[in-house]
Length: 240
Image (cartoon, rainbow, N blue to C red; front, side):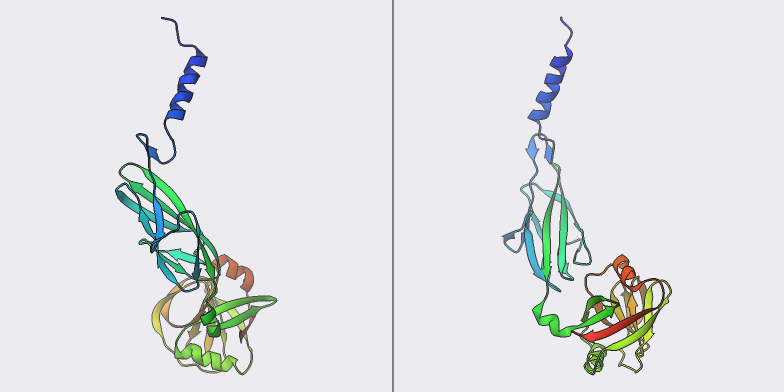
């Protein structure tokens, strides 16, 4: 028997690669998965949501699904839970990547979430100005936030804020507001009423009994630090 030539071996390898699909296939069967919101097919498409909306993402496959995992590319814009519940947080775009595992193999697919402003919520916002940078915060529905709105209706409030604990900027309001303290975990962008007479902007996390006044939209820890800086900062709070 003649030995196999190098060209013939390469030909056999190429034939095998052509015969068997590599991506998302096992034993010659292609694994498919479809993403649905309600009855709408949103697989590898753009889906529009209003800020503060919630939608449940469902996964459909002709194969028996064993596990599904979800991941958001921009949690400041949209988050997704382990059960596929998407929460639109602020204006912007986020990619939700969905990894599906079946008994036959696995598949990755995606959905682009485009979050637009909630027009009805615009009356419940305030502006935060640092230098020439303007941020927007959505106010909470409590008596503390309402009292702050009434104070800002009289004119902008300028607060000299200091860094505390490498997690927040804090400064005195100059008056007392009603408190609605509850045990919460404050995170980047949270605006907290502290002891009824100070406002705090968090750029990191902290667990305590606070009153949440509102939240700055579309901000991560890194973005907030770039705006607020390392030390003291002058912040102007005003109504939109």
